[in-house]
Length: 158
Image (cartoon, rainbow, N blue to C red; front, side, top):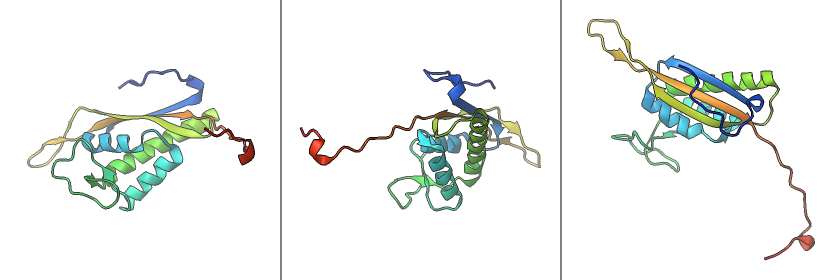
């Protein structure tokens, strides 16, 4: 599988990518985790996935939530997909290492998506097909803008 992500106004030198091909995880779980960590800072996304592994925070299931129970917190339906979280966490760390090789700082996870992969055969007495998915992660360097302190007397009020 080639990279599906197109460079939408980003500079290639300020971007790092990682792709997991035919990961042994469910597409449905991979999709929900990608939505959960997308548009977050890399450190925050890693903390969220580590807390999912420790079963502290549930991943909210927005689309594939049939017969999924409610979880405590500010979410409705959710689960703790530990194997899928571990695989996507490895992928985020790989993209982070690619970014450090380029010398990027202040990393922001802009793109995380999953695609269905070809189902591989399982062995055994009654073989079935294994669930597999492709996952793609893109990280960019985000500029940190320092705000200048303006005293209250000099601020404009509306």
